[in-house]
Image (tube, rainbow, N blue to C red):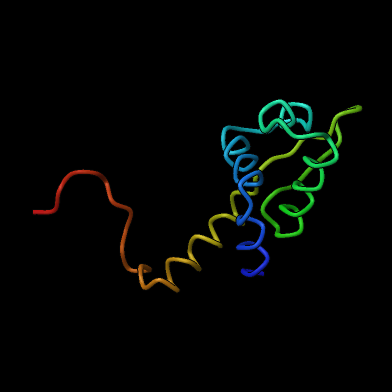
Length: 98
């Protein structure tokens, strides 16, 4: 699964979609406007993010609404911190160490 996530995040357009979804849910139309890609390409990129388990979609009338899955991102971040040897390190809160 981690390989799928890394692969899904290796594309700049998918990163732009993720960045937009980090602000909240968005319709495919809103994502098209945000990333400047065609509807088939945005849908294809969303499919890759769904396959990696990072995004879920739902129908709302004629629109498809996408959102990030926070629990998936939390699991991925925890795994990455452990792999990098940062598991015992808490988040930095600005300022210099004394």
